[in-house]
Image 1 (tube, rainbow, N blue to C red):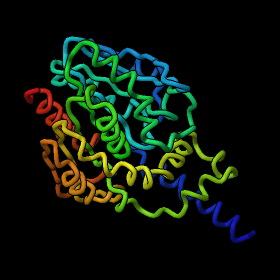
Image 2 (image 1 turned 180 degrees about the horizontal axis):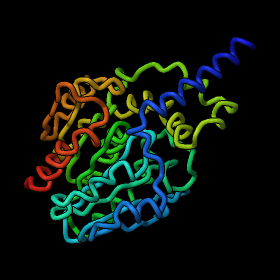
Image 3 (image 1 turned 60 degrees about the vertical axis):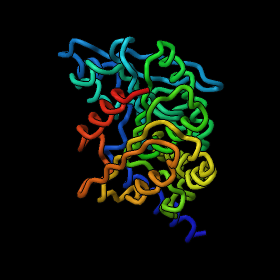
Length: 289
């Protein structure tokens, strides 16, 4: 019993430590006051919406003209729409795309904050109404997924191909065989530890526990993806094995695909190398339908 208690305590310390180490990916919820201050000097400001999807309410931010193609951002784990807030201020993108960024189930201001959803199929279904609303204007919709947002946008392309026109994978954890064995995940879901964790980290742990099996379940579906895809992967990523970039390219056998491997780049691409994502978005929206 003492050994078990020590493991639980160690798991808690490890997971809280990871939350600090991955602060760039953590992206706690921005309050309305923080959003207001962030965009105070900007002529264009984001609007916020909630859509009911089954038993969940999904929150998202958007900015830009309805007449433009859509760049649809999906954050990693943990995270929120605010991981992409700087893109909402990018003057080049604002002239070219309408931007939408969601709070995935269990994160940000979507309902049941702190309750993660392990099933990528269910997560895709929760986000479907937001994509459908974006697609109503007939514009191209490009999905951008960072980290665990990567396999989610792949799942969406598998399940709802008519809604999606392009994919951008950013440091995406797509290969089940490359998922790390993190011993502290299961102890971290023990109720005494779980309720001591910050809610974002709690939801993150719940979904990551199921990631390996979810990725394995998706394997047959990769060949159904036909949307043009760009894969951005750093060779110094210690959180998502760089081999994921190669795996993703190998799986996309029926889609036009470009792999961008960057020496020296780590996992935090959206913040350290935004120009790569901007370039990928602009390339995708200029591609022929």
